[in-house]
Image 1 (cartoon, rainbow, N blue to C red):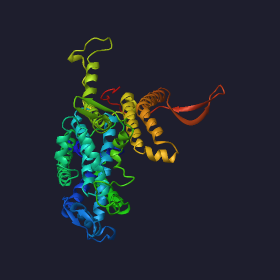
Image 2: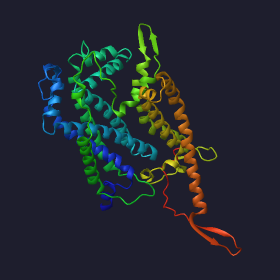
Image 3: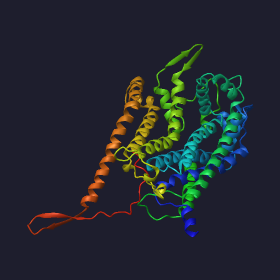
Image 4: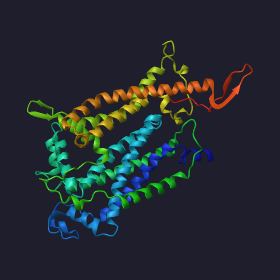
Length: 462
């Protein structure tokens, strides 16, 4: 019983395992600071006259949402710190979830019995992005008000039900008086679902235990409180020392105005880049006109991305099962002839040992990075004295060709590293010690490679 408890307790045997802990404790900070913000925030679009402490805006008509956010930021003691810590925690949470997914993909941690955990993290990434967008709209400032135009365009681009969905969000008019309460309710609902998913993930970890690498350091169970202190402390430092979302500089939202130089949060940059480089295509089907220039970059690309992430474990398992049903001579294997490896589900892959899977991850990162960079096509054109059209055309070709080149190079590097490992095992490790043989020649002394206790890998993953 003692060994069972030790196995199922939290283990921190590799630095890459910290991403999940950062995500968990960032979410804890989000819940605590969000509960404080709820006390002072008023999710209403009713117009009032601002008479707060910020002089340049005094006397203007603003919504109650904006007025309460200004009061919280400038007049409540510690209110601005809470707001900024909450915003920074949201950015760090999404980053930690993305890195956790990347770590699980590269090491094969998405395989059984941890496929459900993989699906939880994929869902958390989508919900984290949705929570960030709904939260950004709540202050009803000029920056968030400008994003409402994009939300309206995206909803209208949905075939057949776009107009109906738009009326649910905004009511009969834009922006109307309904969108902030709807965003507020959606923001709270998403937070509850995310909390439930993180609790379910924790229960699954306790049930199945932690995966590990073949050669890993001894587990350090005291790392969880240290990660909690480090994560919470860093978020407080970010909120205290780095200004974010100064709504008093943006001013209240106006339907006919938008702030210059506005950009989304980092995790939505790839959607902004996709919108900028997408050609202005339209498709007419009978009486309906589909705006592909909005539909593809904002709905199709994210939909394909998250569907591929969720379906990859099933697709890999299906392909590997079909391959394992035949022996080296191509004969079908019976159930008795198929190997059963006890405990292999706990072992993680090294990225170099699964070159195809690693190359797929690198290609995906390249595709995302190019779209993210395309969100600054106007700034690039200005800095390099080019036309915006030239930079846009470059990114249109780069997002297609770049991932292919990245896939080939990453797979070649993995195969080269595998060859280097085999060479070290066969010939030994260079020691730098030169000896002279009896025949007068000089040779370097080679030490035998240290063989780790190898356990069978989960799959080849190629």
